[in-house]
Image 1 (cartoon, rainbow, N blue to C red):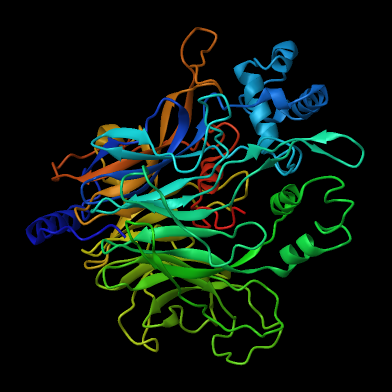
Image 2: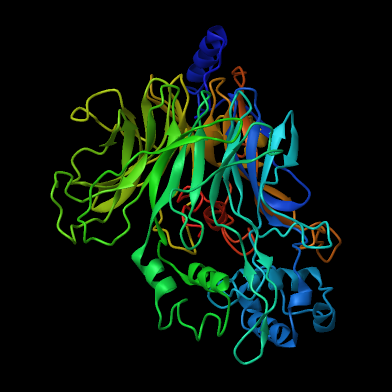
Length: 605
């Protein structure tokens, strides 16, 4: 969580100001500071910021993605052209291949470059799961200090003989503590291997990496990165993540602690697995075979365990397992996992864990029913279920906890015969028999809502759905960010708390964090000049810039209420523009960045 501001006077003033201001939703009570406009990529997404306003930012959709055309041959270019011919009529903003000769020469037009990147990413009809092709990570970590946004490179490296980063990593800086500890999760880059000659004498190059997802922390903004080594590293190096760090230097997240049966079998199987000599070394190296199993698997390759790590500037953290919610039957091979998402100044940790549908089970059968995961608190050596009776409840997660022990998240409740996610807050100080999740009224009864963060004054932020139609993958409901005061039971749409003249410019869709000065980290949809895959502004037939919607990291700073009353037009009653994000909706973007969520894709193998 974002940490306690040391001046009690400042906390008192900003707390009283913030709580009183959100009661009048027709007037502005927050100003917007745009933190995320950068020239090299399209989208930026807010992570947490500390009490000084230093923000962690994620970015994606890099312009001029560094495709390594030297590794493609004529058959590959033929496959790309067929791929495009079958799809270009159904993809907004892209045309058929424009210049085949230039493409094959490694100098594609922006349109053709966009298609090659899409082909490399596509895991169903492209080469995204083929270990013999370049990998696209395209998730870029950044930090903003004093209004200046800069890159934060973790483990990515340049291609040999160049100054170009591979951009094959998936990296997120999750936050920066007041004391300057930055932290997050990142992967090693995919790099081309030495040529391998198969049993038929054919040469192959495989794109492999040293390890998958690893948690990290840094005391000097990435100059030296301290890695959290997973508990279990067999086969593929394991996985770990750091998702929060307290001001006291306690990090929480998760780590692999056991290999899944299917993954172990795939590696050790002598017929069709990596132990099959016809495959290794007949077709590929062992390293490539393991990587291929990972890329093509849709199942968890590791069981994960919540962790707590006491950080050390010298790189020697003391790491401990926090345990599981349930003890499975010894013969039950299904993955059982737990995840720690936040820690407060007292070292109390919250997150979620796999559990049984019947919370009273103490002697489970091999196939004990287990459809959900449940919000938990890790405290005094126990893993405590915050959900209570599971009878009428589904999955839940706890995303944050403040220093008073109030945790927030979401829980699935049955409303009018349908499962609906509702944000909650809960006091973790009471005994587990007295734990009671409180779900305040939000946008409407059928709105899915989630609380992402809470500060020490009891202000909660998150997002919820604001449309009532039946959603689908092609027509999702729009969301809006909210702020809720748990002390006075006041709920407000953050789009109704910004100045009138900004309400049609910024559509705030999610709030990710709130510090003790009341400053909110959020992500908004904004309209901007449309750029092609090379970053060049696109023009219409009259020479005017085309426009498109992008998402942008912003801060919302509390301001005094000036009594301004907005007109109906200024209220921003604009039509949804779901197709304007190029090849996906806002929700596709949020899914890529992690955290609509899976908390940044826990299973990046």
